[in-house]
Every structure is written in C-alpha cells, then in structure tokens.
Length: 471
Image (cartoon, rainbow, N blue to C red; front, side, top):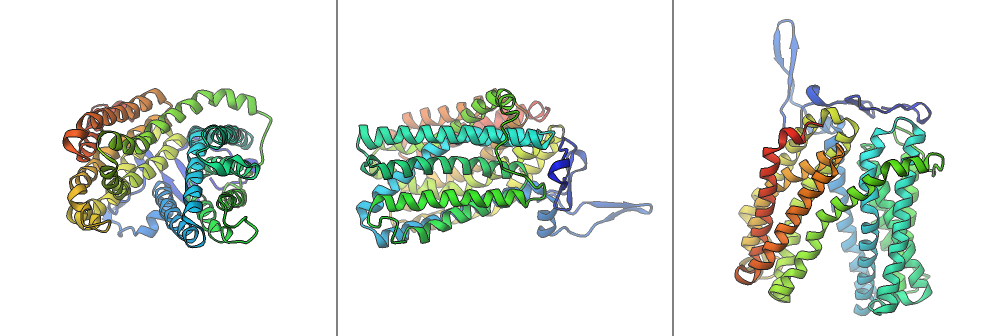
C-alpha cells in the first residue's frame, strides 16, 4: 500500500500494492514464476494471454522479487568478502590476517546469535501492524533486543576469548575491545533492519545495505589512520562500515513506498515487548536450530574421522551451499507474505514451491552432471573424496525445500512449537546419524544422514500439508 506514513492502514487484505503493481494472493494470485501465462476471459470464450516476461513477474510478484534480492545479497557479500580478505592478505602479515579473521568470525557469531530471534520476529509482527505508531514500537523492540543482546554478546566474547582464554589477544586492549563490542551491536541492528526490509517486501534495501557494508570495508582497511599492521585495523574497518551502512537503511526506509521512519518509538514499547516476548524466544530457537548443523557438522567430522577428511567435507559442503541459499531465501520471503495475509497462506506456499523449483532445476542438473569437475577445482583428490557427498547434498535440496516452506508457514501463522520441533528433530537426527556412521562410511555419512533427516521431515510435511497450510 503506497500511502503516506501518517495515514497508513496495513492489514491482511490479500492485495498489496508494491510500487504501483498489485500482487494478488490466495485464490486470485498472479501467475507464479513457473506458473505459465494465465488465461484472460472475454464474452466469446477464453483467450490465451501473452507470455509473461521475467521483468513483468518481478514487477508484480513481491515474493519472487524479495527472494532474488535475498539471494543476491548472499552473492554480493561473498564477492566483496573475498576481495576484502584478498586486500588484507596483500597488505598485512599472515598473523594479522588470521587474527583478524578469527575476531570478525567471533563478531558475526555473537551478533547473529543475539539478533536472529528479534530479526525473525520483525517478519512476523511488522506486517500485522495496524498503525504507524505500532509499527515503530515493534521495530524499536526488535532493535533494542538485538542491540542489548549484541552488546552483552560482545562483552562476553571479549571477556572469554580476550582475557580468560587469551585466544584473541587483540581484544584485550581497550581499542580492540570497544571496536569489537560496537561492531557486534552494529551488525546485530543491521540484521534486524534487513529483516524489517524483507517484511516490507523491500528486499532491495537489504541488498543495498549489505553491499555498502561489505564494499566500504575494502577502502577503509587500507586507510593509514586505521592502525595499519594490527588486528585493530581490520576491526575498525568492519565496525565503521557496519555503522555507516545503518545510515543507508534509515534513508532507504524513509524513501520507500511506505515512507517509514526508523526513529525509536518509546510510547507503546512496553506493550509491544509483552506482545512479542514469546515470539522473540520462539523465533530465536527455531533459527538457531536451523543454523547449528552448519557449525557442528565440521566438528563432528574432525572428531570421528580426521582433520584431513574435514577438508574434503568442508569444501564439498560449501560447494553444495547453493542449495541452502535458494530455498531459505524464498522461504524467508514466503514468511513475510504469509505473515501479512495468513488467510492466503496456502496459495503463497504453493507459489513459493514453484519459485524454488524453477530456481533449483539448473543447479541440480549442473551438480549431478558436473559435480566432479567442480570439486576438481579444489584439487585432484577432491572428486574422489567428495563426489558421493555432493550428489547426496544435491538430492537433499528437494526435501529441504519442502521443510523450509513448511517452517516458514508455521512461523508466519504463530505455530512456533511445531516449527521448532521440525527443525530440531531434523538437526538431531542428522547429527546423531552422522556421529555413528562417519567411522564406517567416511564423509558420505553426513550426506546420507542429512538426506535421511530431510526426507523424513518432508514426508511429515506432505502428510500434514493440509493442516500446515490451514491457519
């Protein structure tokens, strides 16, 4: 709805005006990404309409537009991340580069752990706001929770890894400690702003903010006043870029179709916090359960096989990450659409599955036919070690799409326990099966375990589909 902020009245109407193009959900939804041209009727009988181009679909399908923006964000940040660390490697010693990488990894982990619940809650609650004041109060709750959590997480990491264990000596100094805590807060708040943009069907704002954040780090890291030759140089570049990128979010929301203000709104804060507290915790646990496999599986491979085996596993897992980018991106966009209009959730879920299917066909074929060639880019021994694992991860993309869509629908319709149960059961099944199968099957055991857990979860989704898509 493109109306001024002072008179906005969002609701679960079923039609959403996005920059002049109306998206219709439910029974009267637009043709999906793979849904064909559609039919136009006249008194003389049905007449086949002209094919719909991708540009027209992007103009009218907010879910598709949001999904592509989220995936583009991943690609852009990865490219600029590579450039950043290439510059660091060329201008710093390996010791400084390695310490900086460890510090920024800890920063991201602390910030994400602090912000994931608040960020996901924005997608659930912002579309349901009935006034501008309520929208701002709910966003203020999300930003406050993320900022406080980020600060506490930063202080904890500084105390533990900087002082108690001395794992990251750069954090022991006042400059390094302050930079780390500020960076954690900025990163956490930026994550909330990103998900607020997704909730507003404006994924391009998320893309723009992250592009600015990751691009700014490159020139900042080589400026002479950033304590060159020390780990503080890298932390300063990260923190300054993260802080400056928040300004772009402020401007972007103000200039959006809704004309949103990101100024904190204290009136109504307490009420919004009480309304959202169960959601904040539930969304946090659901997201953590979805993320933990990526962090824990490499540790299990090292513990049960060897560090050398983990090198092959990690390269293969990262190569297969394209599948873990597509369906989560579309599912996040579906989460926003379903939260805005729960009554049309069945149609939105079907459209989400069509979009995922259209986007996955090409990479699945490429990986099944040429996966060995892709693995050979890492070294001549990688195809022999990781080919079967890559095939299994490729096949798992199909059930993974179903479970991601189901979790998005359950989250949007406030059935958080069911979403948590589904994510947590698949996580535990894959971890336990991998632990027992790795010594005998090697790294392919992770693929079999992951595929098995996702398949069982997908079967439950198929059996429960009508119940899941009935709000």
